[in-house]
Length: 295
Image 1: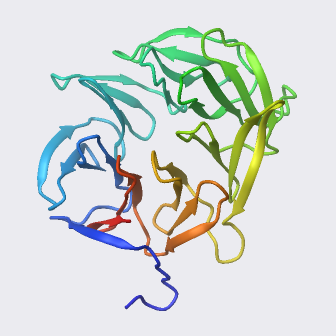
Image 2: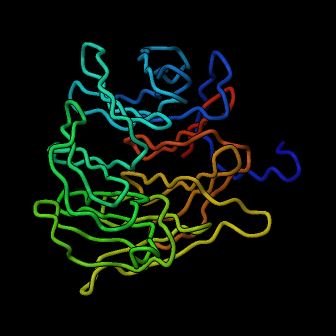
């Protein structure tokens, strides 16, 4: 029975028990083999569906590392103020920056940014800068890349000093040419591209969905989770299949939404540490002593 005030309507398929409790800042990612990678201080640990440890990767970055993605024999991880790439021999190359990152689906680059808003192309092997577009005059709050790798979405936080409004620039990935802009009114804290090209972002306490039209990006829907009794979300996790997305306020609540219209399908206030989708479209929700697999 769920305690009063702890509403939980997630339809749980299975539970993965964890050998030890995990801290509140633990992270979660699911790889293509269906292994759950839990990040805690100094390491990423992979567990199977029985909770058994099946792999461990030492990560010498501050904070609880997050597995960003794996590409061939390289593993990309994020710490508090740095990003690293680990090769097949376990060697870690580190880029000391808290700037946002985005993966190029074609594997040519890793996209990042400078403090003044220049987008950088980093070498996938070393994370060393190889090229950069001109400064935008504003810090970049988030980056995303289209599923085909042809467009880069640059969320600008805005700058009164340089008269740059908060918004999203849509740029050609090959040339950096500005294709269109979208005025967001405030900094977009997180930007994620869905498998159909729809963009999902966090603006204040709201989740917004944006799609391309004849005149550039256009808002499709917006859902607010702030206000009295609510908590501003920290992350959006988009399923590769099934048309759903998870909106997470770390350690507080989770909302499962229909990607098409933002309708709330299920939710939980059991203080989730993190959440991640697997390739089959199931949501894995990390708690203190277990992972719940949600239908």
